[in-house]
Image 1 (cartoon, rainbow, N blue to C red):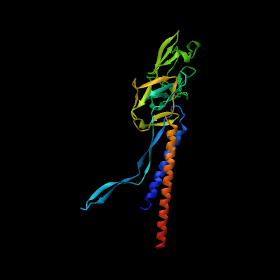
Image 2 (image 1 turned 45 degrees about the vertical axis):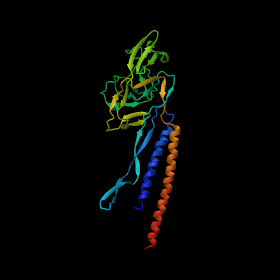
Image 3 (image 1 turned 90 degrees about the horizontal axis):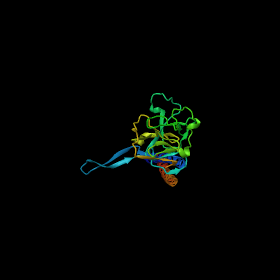
Image 4 (image 1 turned 135 degrees about the vertical axis):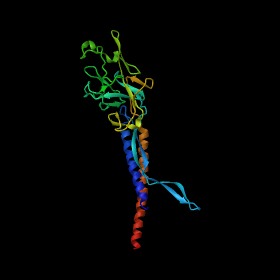
Length: 285
């Protein structure tokens, strides 16, 4: 019993260290485009009912006793980050909920559909390949609402970016709020494909895989579905910034440091008490 306090404090200090790691990660990404901050949840290691005897000799519950808390899970906070104007017509920000659906560039176009060939991201810093396909910064393909690669060209039948197919992206390209891609020029106009926006019914069941990419956690049903129009708005020429706030994360870090310092002082007191008890036990022999 005398060492229970030491065990409880040790678990609490480890949880504080875990919380500091999450805070440091958030703080390091306050300027990262599309970054979503994380937060840590905790759980009791063990809780037991505390009972007392009534004058009648019956047991009466008076509460619960916990022997400490530990880190449970790290969750991602998908609240909206601020939008920053870039002036690049291939940059697209999602205002509201949802993700762009991206396919790895080494997957054969005729391959059978497999969800493992795709991932999801919020960052919309896109570019065009030499044959006019819309890709992300890693060269992976952006999907349309029919789950096809998106090609932005005047002649979709052309296999190469011929001179007549070249576009002035800064003038000819329009991406509507619903994701519809349009070409608008005095000599040619037309509707092309529509960017697919997907979302998850339970975002606690998706995890980050780096570079602002997300996937459903293995073995968990996150409830993927295509977002209906009207629940999001695409903003052309803009990018979403990080939703982590420097001041808030610094305050979290300060609070964790103070809490850890307080626990370490209490731990020293507990340790001294145990040493004294051991010393008294040796004297009494």
